[in-house]
Image 1 (spheres, rainbow, N blue to C red):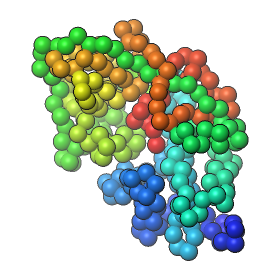
Image 2 (image 1 turned 45 degrees about the vertical axis):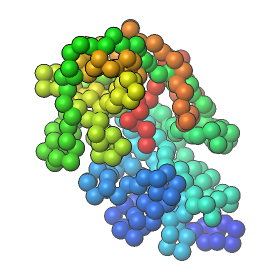
Image 3 (image 1 turned 90 degrees about the vertical axis):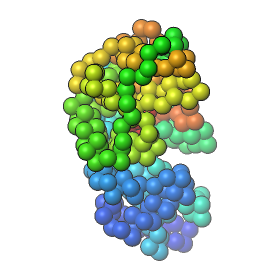
Amino acid sequence: MDLSRSGLQFTLRENFKHDARLRASFNALTQQTFEFDFEQWYQDGYWGEGCQPSVLVHEGRIVANICANLMNLDVLGEHKRCIQLGTVMVAPAYRGIGLSRVLLERVLDRWRGQCDLLYLFANDTVLDYYPKFGFHRVLEHEYSAVLTPSPQPCRFHKVDMDDVLERQRFISAIESAVPAARLAMRSNPDQTMFYCTSFFKDCVHYSAALQAYVVMEVVDGVMTLYEVFARQTLDLQALIAQLSTPQTIRVVLGFTPLDVSGFEAQPLESDDSLFVLGQAGQFIEDTRLMLPLLSHA
């Protein structure tokens, strides 16, 4: 599809990830906008059909993008097919001529009515933009707890995510894991590996005794537990106790625990706000849930 804006000609492209030239242009714009790119994720074989960019090309260069990310979520025991929009970006020289609107309207036309939940995360600069398209802001809640320092050493060991066999074991655990959250991603190793081979590469830990993987980090005595992958439901409080050290004073969860007792829920304070198309996401606010941090695309 070709279109014209402000005297410039653009071509819409999709399904281009195996085109090295366009993929390089896509990565360049992502790096310029967000300071990361998708190349290693692609080279490692994790860019599957769940991430579907729609881009506008001008003179051979990608200048605008929006990704539709296909997500399967378990929500309070029910399966929901969801679409998360993300990586919304326009090259600086092409802003202000409606390119984002063109892409957003196309994606909405494609997916509206085809999923249970269509949502995105927006920063403070565009909070007034997405309601024009029928999106409503939804408040999430974050769960945390004060910890009694454990005298025992941490019983998890760090996983070497550069080791191919270790990666394969981790992926198998993701695929066979039972939900550890009230609102959980169903088996989605591609999305999880996006984080765990880059930003959280040093945050994957394993316990042979529990046969469980966790993604966690500790900064200034505060443990952030992003995710738990195990074949059976675990006692989260006991697991956290095994993860903690004498220096760990607090834990913050990157998901809503199955059992919220012992945790304090607070409205989530974040640089990004959740927007859901229509009223379909109001249950997230009403039942004090949050979308898992590792599901953010």
